[in-house]
Amino acid sequence: MIQFRDVTLIYPRGPGVFDIDFYVDIGELVFLVGPSGAGKSTILKLIYMDLMPQSGEVEVNGFLTHRTRRRYVPYLRRTLGLVFQDFRLLPDRNAFDNVALPLHIVGLARHEIRERVYSALEDVGLGERTHHYPRELSGGEQQRVAIARAIAKNPAIILADEPTGNLDAATSLEILDLLTFLAEENGSTVIVATHDYTLTSRKKGRLIEINEGRLLD
Amino acid sequence: MINKFLYLVTEGIRALWRTRLPMVGSTLTIALTLVIFGGAYIALSNFDRATRRLQTQYRIDVFFDPLLTNQEAFQVYQRLKDVEGIASTEFISKERAADIFEREFGEDVMEVLGTNPLNTGAIVLVARGYRTVRRINRIADEITRIPSVDDVAYRGELVRLLERYLQFAVYSGLGFGVVTLLGAIFLVSNTIKLSIYAKREAINILHLLGATRKFIRFPFMVEGTLQGLLGSALAVGIVVGLLDVANYILEQFVLYRIIRPPYLVTGLVIMGIMLGSIGSSRGIRKFLTPRALKAAT
Image (cartoon, rainbow over the protein chains, first blue to last red):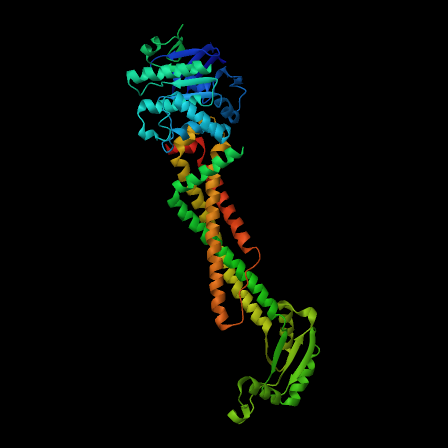
């Protein structure tokens, strides 16, 4: 499913990640934990091929970094659901349109898009707020919309980069519960990058620790 | 596929509405450019038709030295027949000239002046194979070189003059048109640039969600093309409207109508769409690049 083989990436102005080697299986829940600047986001970016390794190789859903040309990266991303700390919602679109966006990208029929969007928004508890704009929603609700957008296309892998970073403790737990529950229901692999160790202790999942760009044993 | 297409077209329209202020500027510039080109096309087509009409009268009026008697003038007249390219000639004696004067001005020159100062001369008709401005000029030059020929007058001269002035007007109009055309392309691409910058965060999100370059670019192409279409609709309205007004005014005074050349409307619409698409693809090529987007943030 996801395989890192001796991956190294050094940024021009500073460190990156070094000799990363791990494997994540189908349906696994993995916490990628480490302090800020440890390299968690870099690893996620390598998975969705926003960055390419300088040495080593990443394999995601059959896409290999050294064989995947730039123009094919969108096809890999369509198999992934991405959730970010800052939600990355379009401010001028309501919850429905935001969740529908990846479905328009893959070119689904209108009726199917409607069905999937309503179902995803129901799943995250926002069935009544489909026509609300991000500015009309709380942080937790915005993150729920982002989760609905990630799960609406039934992705094989969900990548969440500090999904609770902007939320209070209670909401953080709620969001994490929701994310893991839906992923489990969907059979998706989930990788949650977080610096919050307390959060990981509440969930049963594999822990991959990273510090200064290197995995800890 | 059709769903995706419709979605992207809607996105293009939405983007156009979002940048409506700069869009008005670029649409007006496109319209101005098209009005200039449309006007030049109408002028050229009508001039072509008018000169073709004028060329049906291939007559050269020859005036001899006013001091010549009728007999001396007739000898000069005989030499006209040696000039190549002449179909027929008619001698105009002093008396015949006075008749023509009376017919045209309603006055007897002898009664008015007590003498006949009118030139003797000839009317020359150019042969069929010589009826071009260049050849008529050559015949007129040859006639002028005959001793005692004082002057020649012919419509070819009028045609040539008209042609020269119109050419000047059309070429300067087209020169101005090219400048506005470049301006229109620049303004469309600038509108697209503003639209791209306004949507840079959305573009980034689209990339993350798996949108291809085509998917991201298409709405901007739609936006530019729509600007071209709006500009051409405006230009067609202005050109056709002005043409109708001009014809209405002309009808009050002369029996002449400015014709609407074929393919005017189609040509303007196609040109408008092309201007819009060229402008938007320039904008996309220049500003929808990772480097340009990064520089904008």
